[in-house]
Length: 108
Image (cartoon, rainbow, N blue to C red; front, top):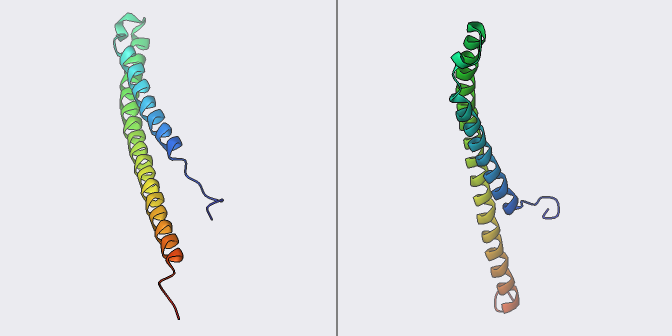
């Protein structure tokens, strides 16, 4: 089974960092445009459209940020579970190897 399923915990760490970075980048882009006021752009119709877009983008980016944060936490939790499982498996195999070579158990 081990040759068919592998979890690279370093890759999971990198994925979590990438997710968190994407949330920061999205928020920074939204904040950068928040300084542009609709009355600086042009016609009143265009101004209204820009204001509406800014409101929807703010709401959407906040929702997306929350979802990405939840995904990042899930990936981080899974990574910790994989590490714990590997540690426990290693301990169990070490114990089994020690009992197998001790020669004192089981028997005649």
